[in-house]
Image (spheres, rainbow, N blue to C red):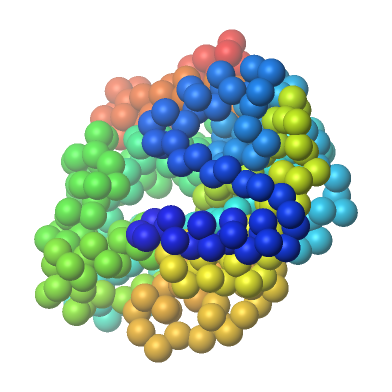
Length: 355
């Protein structure tokens, strides 16, 4: 976030004046966040409030390291987002801000075809396009699991799961997606989009600025639409949230500060300063998220609207990194036709159960 410190200092100053509570904000480099957080929450003097991603927050909740937040403190938030944060039906975190990827596409390369709204529609128009349909980065982190989630897949060797994997395998074999799909990430997808080698690029609205700065001629041909969905029609999103350690000494004050940071006014100011989405429902209902007059504001409006349909959300498991590695290896084996999709997914299912 650019020039984030002045915003944060102002919010802290306002909170201190209104509540006679002193706040000390410490900014930790992202790479050190999890390691330092784990050490601090298990100590006798943890921070009172910590900004984390939901995956790591869920891990701490599983270990009994977080303070449970009562339902009455969730009234100002988007209900679907609150539901996505629950662990075993209980809430151990409050959302701070969200992001939700949109579909960025090249109008010229679309060749007059209707913009698809689902992965299946996208695959069906692939033969008619003037370039690769996209580089789907389906071997990066939990990308494939998030796609499967949009189809309601719970069992990886189910009929529905096989169909989704086969959808991408078919596009790969027919040359509708690049051969590099087996290894490359969203960074390479961005490069290919800017070089006009792919039609669709799914990413956050902030990527529009990079395209505008680095490939102005491509940006001139660019438009935006909702992200591709599966048969359930729900959207993918990411969050950053606040947690209060179970051993925190000032739990009430920490909760008060978290609710202040996420009130209507502070959320609206944060949204205008950055490209993130508010999680406060009143802020999401503001005209800022309803009206647009250029590509950036259109992307913002589409992203915000997507938060109205985000359930069921993918819940992180205790050993998520191992799960991601197993699934991503399977994606590579399926695309490269190492065995039948069903056999590969049967093997994956056994490995996941053994975890």
